[in-house]
Image 1 (tube, one colour):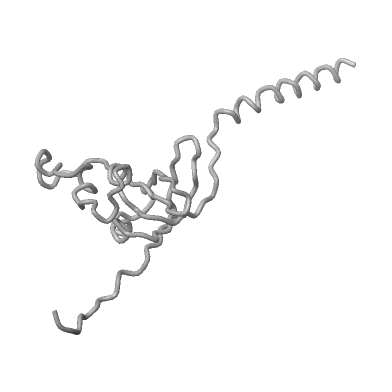
Image 2 (cartoon, one colour):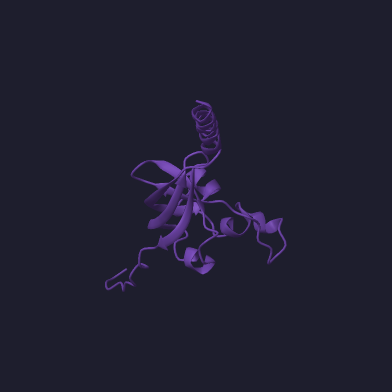
Amino acid sequence: MKKFTLYSSVFLLLFALVPGALAGSVVLEPVEKEGFLSTEKCAAAGEFKDCYLENYACGSDDCFKNVEPGTSLPVTIVLYSHKEGHTYIVDVSKLNPSDIDEGINRNEVTIIGEYDKETNTIMATEFRAPPPPKKSFFKGCL
């Protein structure tokens, strides 16, 4: 009888501790989202194609006037999904910065990674940008 009591108390103790340990952990979902890649400020203002490139270096329009040349400040990159009408923060720390440059201020960018609902952040592990627009030649009279 004592062995049963000892084993049952250990089981109950483990049963009580496991949910508490799991409650503190972050649940990440695999996700693949497509949308417009921009900065948080530009997306909030609805400035997609009109977002100045200086926003990606220092965070706002005309920030180059207040920031020393060559200095980059941390900027929050977001993906605006047109299908959902929702903006996701994108953590691009695992990606090559030159790859991200291909998708800045472009639509139909696909971000693949893991989504954290609590922080509304996609931890990007893969990135696909659409091909650049084709060059066109205007034939005709002006």
